Image (cartoon, rainbow, N blue to C red):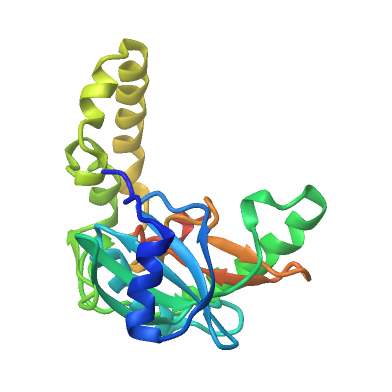
Length: 233
């Protein structure tokens, strides 16, 4: 499923009904599963995202409760339904994408991110189980971290529908996949069953960096997992 195509004018009408006079409405780049727009109300800046997966927005809202200076996570102001899907409005953080920084800035930014992930390791995720968790319970499906890691061939996600058929169409790729899966099944039992919060998607513009090379936002927690935080590294 691709992200929805929504016009600026339609978003403007929706936002005006809730927030009154808005300004600086602009379509934002990035996002594999949602379409995002920046806008302002007075002096405050926000982001409105539209997509089919409201569960992702609820995970963002829960993750925002973990925000602190070393791990800035945007506050989610509102979640609702619109355009045959869901939307979320959050406070806008500014910065450059981590994965687009020049080499001379990357080391300091990575150090800042490591500090943020260290703080994330102190979060006590509620619920039980390993793998992708649901908000607000924090529950995940798999009984162990190792079982989650080796479950790739059995995963059925509407977002990735048909991936096995596409893989089977390329014989060389299928062979590599089978070798990798066999190796993973041998090694996964040695992984500790640590249950911490994993972001799971720290590239693709989901981490912003300030001019002084400090992390200014970590967002899009839809792929967040419960498991060994080494996974993020």
